[in-house]
Image 1: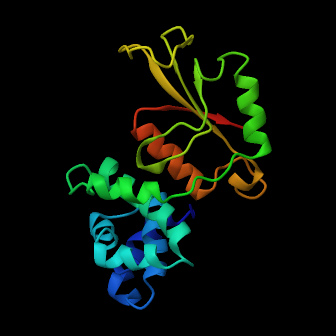
Image 2: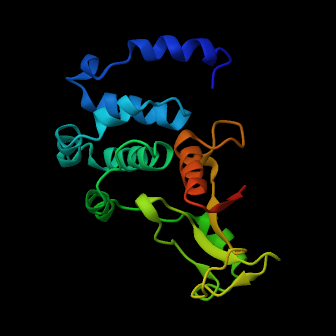
Image 3: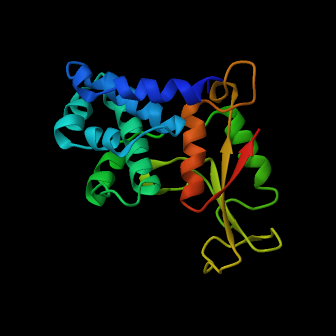
Amino acid sequence: MPECSDQLFPMLLEELFEDHFSSMPSVWLDIVWSLAALGKVKQTHLDSVLQPHFYTPLLEDSSLAVPSRQKLLNIITVNDLEFPDGPCFPKEMVESIVQNYKVPEAGALQRSVREALTQLAPLGRYLSQNPSLPYGLTADGELVVDKNAQPILLDSKLEPDHHRIVLVVLDYKDLTLHSQVPTGVNALRMRLLKHLGYKVLQVP
């Protein structure tokens, strides 16, 4: 975030309108997604993107479908979780978009960390690999622990003092250059996972 963001964003938002990008819908999608990732998006921005006449052509364009699908899912999640007073996106449409969203394969680092974690929480009984999460959000593992931070069986009934934990392993490509700061897409992913009630175990 730039140091002058408090002065910059109000001026920028005054100039950002969907009409200016009517011939470039994918650019408007990128702008709205970026504002959502930065926590600067408004309900009007979300509404402009979450209209079938806007997003359907993007999802049908083979050259844009994959990145557009992920950004659209992120925007839907922000709309539903961070703007609860606004209209929720239809659940059946979310499921349809998620069904056609291809989750990236785990890399060597993700597999290595997950394997190390199985020494504490055996896979299948205490640790879920590539869990199925709402809104197409991804994580490298999921487990539940009790108030003493001890793993419990995945099929156990959740109690009030249990905590759902997701493992998010960030490789070099998931971090900003020469830092340990997650890129925008990963920072947004972890923010949304927390909104869903998960505690995020980030590595590194």
